[in-house]
Length: 178
Image 1 (tube, helix red, strand yellow):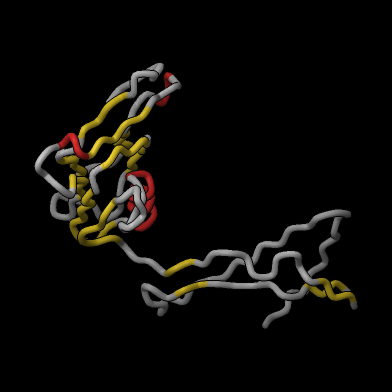
Image 2 (cartoon, helix red, strand yellow):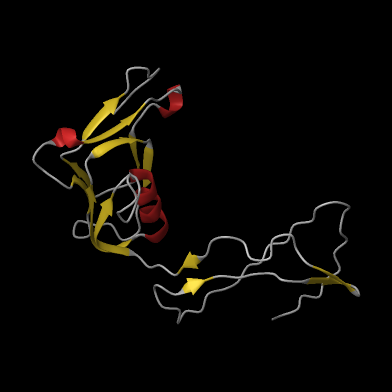
């Protein structure tokens, strides 16, 4: 429980407040961060927010390392390439990282920026989980803008490989580069 004293003029209607907090350097990977706001006192009047405990929470994470599963069915670590590449961009890596992809068609457009920690030793690979045939994992997209006519854009990324994955531009695409 804490109090914030401020001189803020509220407007008629809805007013929004954001709660932010620092995370201790001693927080361990896997710790859960959650918060709620049960009461706001303005002057001598108490107000209960319409949402006191919003859905969701954060988990303390560190750089990626090791093997992860991409599965559109939801049973892996990531549901798609975009979610995996966003984690790479945010967390970086501290050892080689492999993403094994469950067979299926993934309709996504992804941008991979420079990844913190990637090097000749700490590489990033995306590979079909079952390597018998590359047709079992398909990354496809229908670019509809001239400036964004790609499926995968390595925007500063280095040390990234794709193995046994088929890339296709869909038939209805207006533009397309692989």
